[in-house]
Length: 181
Length: 181
Image (cartoon, rainbow over all chains, first blue to last red):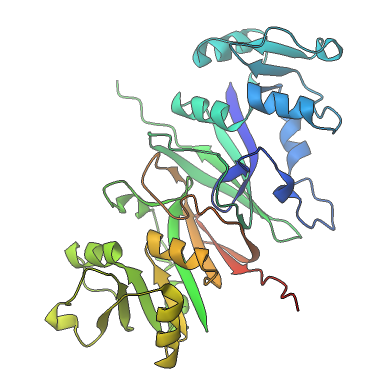
């Protein structure tokens, strides 16, 4: 059972501008690399995202992007659009409990998305691996990927991929703490 | 004339913990790479740092690390330790003015250090190139490299070096804005 992050951030650690725009992510990409997205998605069973990320997707003019089951973490949402009701579900409650329930239903490798959801999972020690692409721009303000988490977490740097257009994707795996007997 | 940054940061963008500790920078380094530091220093004429970074160096138990002239940006400091008076100087005033004065004295390639000094230079559009090594740790809080700069700055990613121990150093060059006639 493992939870994964796959995200692009600015040099100063933002995943979106203050008004949730991700236009700055559009970077010259002549060879049309997907930055490893399809390979990443092939190993996950489901996506779990925060309410804000979900609303952002619904409000965008782009086609619904997911082919795997999506769970939206929200204490306020109750219903989902009828055309998505087969593949989308609202979940709420303590994060370890949600993870346990999803695992019991066979969802063991979960793509965690949305800054505050990622931060909640990090605080619980429940992020196993992160795939992060950095776009060489300082945004100056925005929605911070890690925020001020308040807790220290060690990762090891497992892989770096330099794409044709100069962007770099780095992969980080959580260092497992030694268990004291 | 160009100003450079050479710095290590955590995954979440901090260059030191809240109490200015950089112990977390100590990362296994069996091949004793200098992460490009000596090559970087060979191309700069002088170092310009903030008061806090300067005081941090004076208070540390390590030998004074610089062989090039050092300028400390401070409105409050007036004197420097006598043993450093040949190589260290206090400067104050508006940043473009300081840069102009240093250039007139032959210091054209300057290593800018210390988070708030780096941020001040970025705001003025006066950072030409940044060499950034990321240590795979989330610190959770600390002294932020970029802070919330409030202004957008585009860089291009010019080089990435993967060191034997898995750390990656990325180099970024500022994208020059088109000048409108």
